[in-house]
Image (cartoon, rainbow, N blue to C red; front, side, top):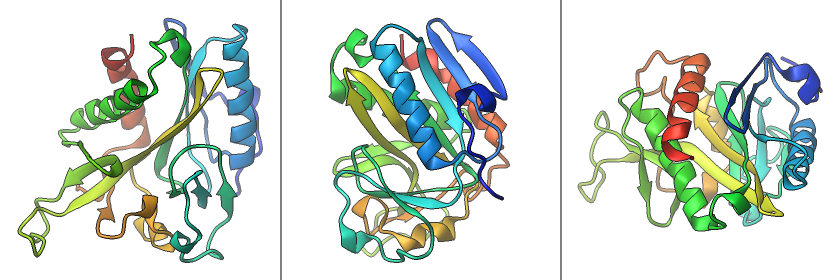
Amino acid sequence: MKAKNHGFDKIRATCQSTPMVDWITSPGLVDYETACTEMEARAEAIARGAADEAIWLLEHPPMYTAGTSAKPADLTDPDRFPVYATKRGGQYTYHGPGQRVVYVMLNVGQRGRDVRAFVQQLETWVIATLDQFNVTGEIREGRVGVWVARDDKPLTPSGQKPEDKIAAIGIRLRKWVSFHGISINVEPDLSHFTGIVPCGITDHGVTSLVDLGLPVTMGDVDVALQKTFPQVFV
């Protein structure tokens, strides 16, 4: 499916609001460069007080993005999909159909000015969202993102449960307003992750809600995200 090059005004399939936060959901696949342009413009407007905060829910066509800490050796199949250098933190990650991308444009300057606490809030939000589907998401020291233990796989040689990554987190702040954000694997083609070393981690895999055996749709995840947001962000 060819990505459509639309901006905010054309892509709003639905737009709901919680107090001071605009929720935007885009249909189809949104071109990455267009998304970055729109996201940065919105973040700038938020910083100027000219726009409300926003949560943007979308999907991208298949691609790899390189964060500010990406290592060239971790791009193992550079010709498979387009590769974009991005301004978010982190290393290489994959985006594509079946993955819910959540661009988070919030005024961290008015939410405590604590970047570490803000990232922890994002992690907590993902975990609370997964809990809506009875999936236990966990954080691991030294490993970015949200992980799930696999009871359905053999134990590792050290006798531990294997753990797979289900969500990635990477943000950037400008004038204390965040952009970029979260990606949650709902039903992407997991083989597409093999073209990179996701987030520089080689000894763990990736999973999705559907891979875990759950018949979850993108709409289900969107409902869970909006339900749990006020439990984490005030």
